[in-house]
Image (cartoon, rainbow, N blue to C red; front, side, top):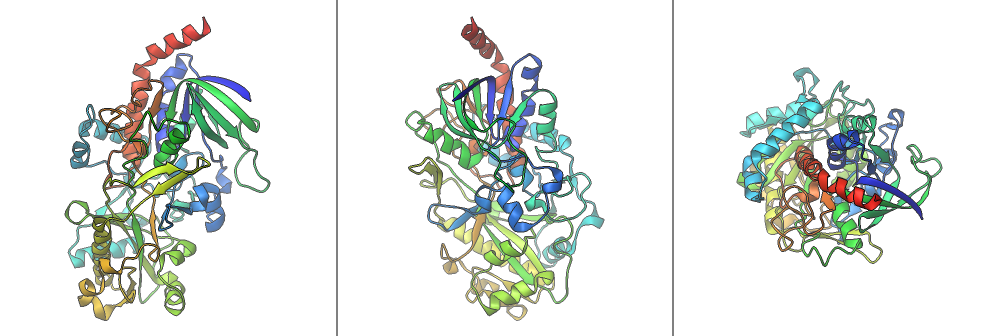
Length: 508
């Protein structure tokens, strides 16, 4: 096994890892060595082709097909230089005061989260998309909301020079989306932070990570790893976990930390989502332009959020319930389809958690509560009203039987759509806002970390990703992850005196 030594090792390069890396530049300037390990590859700009199946294979864990333990929900998360910031749509919202205050974490205030979030909004060029760049898929949503009595809000997004390819979920082919792969990681590397890709952390040992660096397979996208293939033991004065809500708790579990941290893996939430489509009488601009410009927030009142969205043929096809003629009819109408994403704002629930299998691979256990199913039904009803108010001819509603609603049935939506039509495994549910598993709290009795990402009882171990969330947000977690990772980096800088003394003792 090859031996390497660093002062700080960060596991993961997404919103958490990239932010932690840039936050530790002051340590590098003081002469410390900081390393980022990323399991996925580093892609060149020209490798982002927008081809649905090949990009899914290159950018997502399990090609975007990671399933919960019972196979009833697909979890999508990036596994690439930049993590999930490469594959999400760039929506950037600050967490609500009521959410942060309800978390009740000592030392964590909404004002602090807001200040840090605004800083990264500025760094990553977050702004409202210009009106002339909003396509019909989005403008029809806005029109439908106005007619149906829903308040639509515009999403701030983190793009610079957007050309409207609508390929956000497959990695921007124009380099416009300002994720950690475009902003924080390059800035950190320029200042001396090292990043090694194709580097899977197999387990943690005392102040060390055991890492397998893989060779680039023939014909696969991405550059070879910065290190030679092989197994490494990388010693570190401090290890920062930023592998996400699935990766970070799974790594701790397979490293044997479960007994010391009894709440490890708990409080997993994910915003279970349905993709709804509606057919219009004429072609609309749907797969051209930025896909996500507006949302409706009914989280507090009814437990759901609606977002404009646009997915490509494969994802759209798998999201439609059933097979045969009716399914084919909607797919043939693809140029005329309007889409809405319904997200249920789930809560941390006993039993919904991350574990590992016998080989140490992550396993996510998730049960749809009655509240989640009810929220999906209410969101589906609201979406159908918005679709019809925007002029749609028919709507595909997974929580209806039969699943097609015609415009002539617009006054029967409540009757036709309901939670009784939800059967796990027969309705295509997906999730990309993965949260929890290493939750913040007061002690190891109720959580895994404190409000600064310090793992209880293990001073050399920190967490800087969405696994910190003790409960669900009502929005995309991107900015909140960056804010919390920034806090973790600050705490590491404040603890640098201990880091220095430990290093000095080890080398004396």
